[in-house]
Image 1 (cartoon, rainbow, N blue to C red):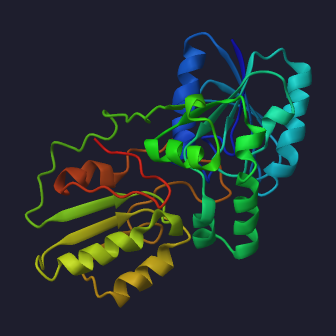
Image 2: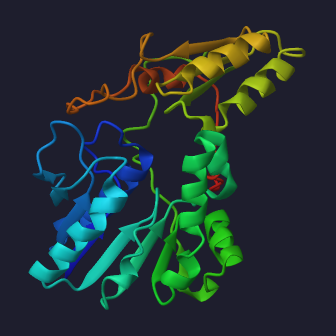
Image 3: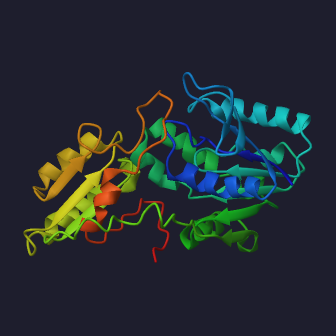
Length: 297
């Protein structure tokens, strides 16, 4: 099968996150099974236009903020030049409305839609564009097959008007070998919770900070470690200080743990984060974003 896949970012993009890992874990396996996958995505300053990324043939056009304008034209060119069997669109930013461009079967992967939570992360003009862009999805993608990563995403799509029978819930997998804590590190004597990930407003980490501040009134030695970088770091540090949750600790770009490459530079193969190796010392912790309410085992 020849697949044309479209996603906002590829896995080598300095801004790539969990959605890109999920995307590439799926399509890399399809390539390994003998299918042909061509990906259209955005680029970044200095990025090569064409590349092979984790076995996928990648064409980069535009940038993070111009892909909406340039991505559709790139898809049109690909559809004219290649005899594809199916088009896959991963909607994790703005939809490109690809069913308008082709009569081929369209398969849609939806980690989550933003809805009104976009106004928590972006300025109101940008958030308004996101909110409005999601409104036509049920009509434009009528007849497409939907892949939702959780029941809550499926229910959100159904509330918006997508036919429930067209949606299949497929949970993301986890690389258990990569995310197994080091057996060489013992558990801390103090209750210690760990968050590893990007620091973004929509992740809702202030909820964790508030919970720790409340819990420490009864468990004074409770600790929360936050490892990662992101544009919400300073706000979260201020929020933690305001709540006097003295048991929290930030580790990121200015600390000992970095979650990714610096913006604008090509990423290099990343070693296993130290925080993962040390997480055997942490007690269990789960933290979900405001729009990512998938069920944890």
